Image 1 (spheres, rainbow, N blue to C red):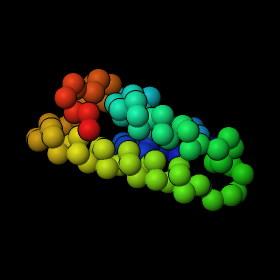
Image 2 (cartoon, protein in one colour):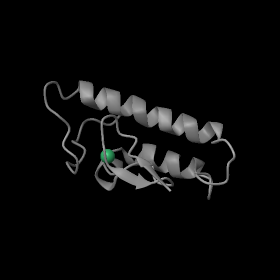
Image 3 (spheres, rainbow, N blue to C red):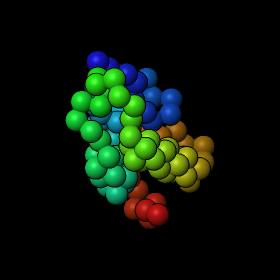
Length: 90
Ligand SMILES: [Zn+2]
């Protein structure tokens, strides 16, 4: 079971248990990544039960972070694989 990476505009396909493609996943701050994993329920992508509120909140938090990240990089497309720049922590 696969779906698109959750990074806005990314067209890579990932296993549904992962948030997104490897490059984008590692672009997220560690705090956001660990929150997503902490809320992940094994098998949630295929057990037919709704995603937990915690998982949805963690995903929303990642989205918010990405918006701030992209606003902080005016005119520069985000390159997958580029490490998070220092000073962008929040
Ligand atoms: Zn991606």
